[in-house]
Length: 283
Ligand code: COA
Ligand code: MG
View 1: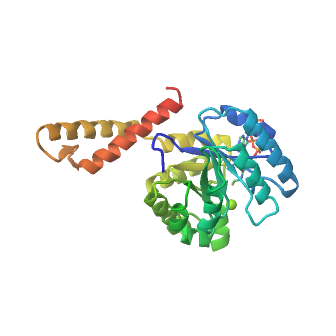
View 2: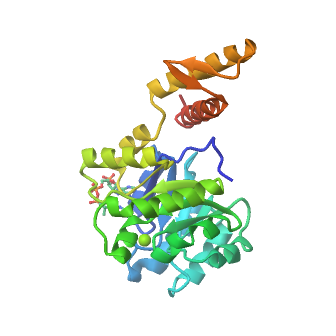
View 3: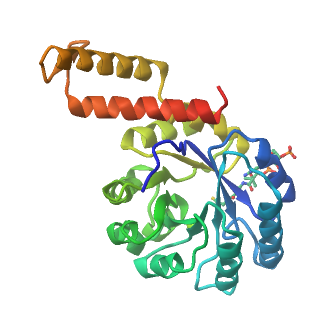
């Protein structure tokens, strides 16, 4: 279901209750926004935030940024009304928190209007264990790793302890062709730490990173975009393979390394991603 032409390098959470941040997001260079009604909004602000966000999404043009709304869970007093409201508003996607069972997804899938898709927060032990069936549920387009909640439930500390869970979700997402974005980096003033974690997430296979502060956007956009070196190699691989094919060979060699059809597929995907980023950034 993943549209390779849509980058998800930077996915910024914005509290649905903060007017200033909702406004500011119109000009931030993010690929997607998660408008949050769940953990970023306090209980006494929940109802006002729902109304503010619904009105804002009806009235505001967020341009090419994908608009994703994170609702409260179905086990809370706000969940049902959040869903009823945003099924009507029909953003690009509705993000369900703490998904553990594909049934909550298929129930929502039946009610969606327009082109709205479903994204799932993967952030509880049971959710991670059910990742494959959740990824296969109807209208699911993406997974968001909720690493803070997961660490809380696991009683774990640090990134190393997350690795199995992250990889299980990546496997499930890729098996179904979904987008998969990494969890947040809490120390939002620590740029070096963010870069290291973005690079690690990129190398694992994530499409991008969820962010909590505008200062984190540039790093995520850079790390999750193909580098000039990557693109140069990809172009040379495609050209060398074309030439080999013309000469009746099934394999080419670039920089002393074998290039087969599968490498050309990866190279072509990388070039398409770079094109999509250029289009998005108006380059
Ligand atoms: N999205 C859009 N704009 C944001 C933003 C966000 N997530 N976080 C901060 N900003 C804006 C502020 O409105 C401020 O704008 P202004 O200077 O033009 O008025 C500017 O960025 C600088 O903000 P700053 O003062 O550095 O941050 P803060 O102290 O106000 O807020 C946080 C820090 C962490 C509380 C805030 O970034 C935040 O709420 N992040 C989202 C948290 C969240 O959604 N959590 C749930 C998922 S983990
Ligand atoms: Mg959470």
